[in-house]
Length: 238
Image 1 (tube, rainbow, N blue to C red):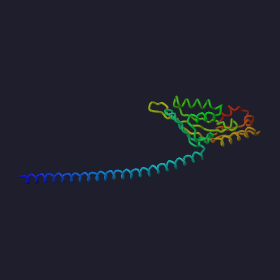
Image 2: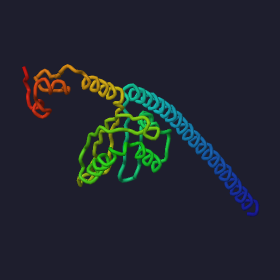
Image 3: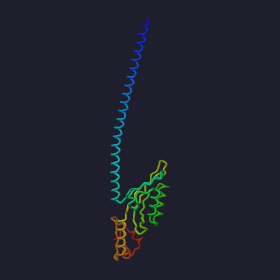
Image 4: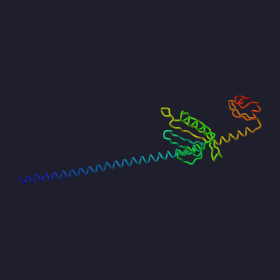
């Protein structure tokens, strides 16, 4: 009986030892499998990150290229652009707009707007301010030709400003955006030609293709015996 009992104990110990070994084996297999899954997950995440990095790089390169193209186009056309978000208070200018107003880029938003106001000709600022307030309060787009005063008024630029309103669903203005074109060269040419026209002793009247009066000089008024208002109302002279 003692021998049989010892054999049973030995069998139990063997089974316990076998079970323990098997448990250890399963534990090792589980660790290996977990490690493999973690490795695969890390590898997949790494591949995904690499693809995202490549995509982001291509996207940044495309944005940079398009920005340079837009900046070059604006520089050639002498047209700057701007956007003013009334909700966030964010004010953004294109590089060409900085160049037109001869303001060093970049500037803080508050300082930028103050510098901008200082550049507006004193005789034009009230009209411009009125149009901007109308745009904000009543949602009205605007177009204005005004002067830019530089070097303490020693130099003048002529620009055309266009403002467009964006409204929310309730019809409230939430942002303004627009452009500003430098018309100085064409305006100076126009002023010079008008000056020459006015000093001519001969009478000169310029008509459009429909016969409408576009320009005339004092000599023409004297020759025709008409006032300026009378001449403007006449579509056909000869």
